Picture 1 (cartoon, rainbow, N blue to C red):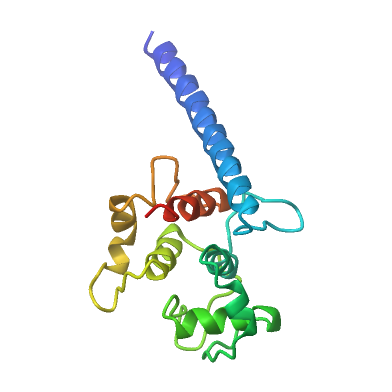
Picture 2: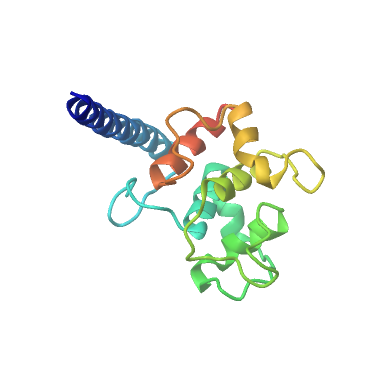
Length: 177
C-alpha cells in the first residue's frame, strides 16, 4: 500500500511540475511578445528560445534594450577593462561598465559567454533601476530576496534553473517596479 501511495505521489508531483513549467513558459512567451511589441526584446535568430539559459551578454543586452538606452550604447564611445567581449558587444559592455550596471566577473573579464544566474541578472536589473550595491541599497548575496521584495521576481520565476523565460519575466516585471 505504501508503494502505491508513493508512486501516486510521484506521478502527481511530476505532472504538477510539468504544468507549472508549461504555465511558466506560456507566461514568459506572453510577456516576451509584449516586450517585443515595445521593441524592448528581440529574441534570437531562432525565436525567443525561452527554454535555455541566457548568457551574461544576452542578459546585459536585454536590459540595455529594456532601459531604452540601446541607441545611446551603440552611438557612444565607452571604455571598459574587459578582454573577453566581441567587437559587436563592445559598446554594450562599455556602457554597462561606465554606468555601473556591471562590474564583470573579474577586473578584466566580463564573462560574456558564461550562463547568467538569477542572482547576476537580478543584480543587473537592480542597478539599472538605480539601486546601488556599493552604497548599501542592497547586498549582492541577497539580490534575489531584494528583487522579490520590490516585485521584480514573482512566483513564476525559477531562480535555481534560470532560463531566458525567467529573464523575460523579471524584465517585464521591472517595468512596473
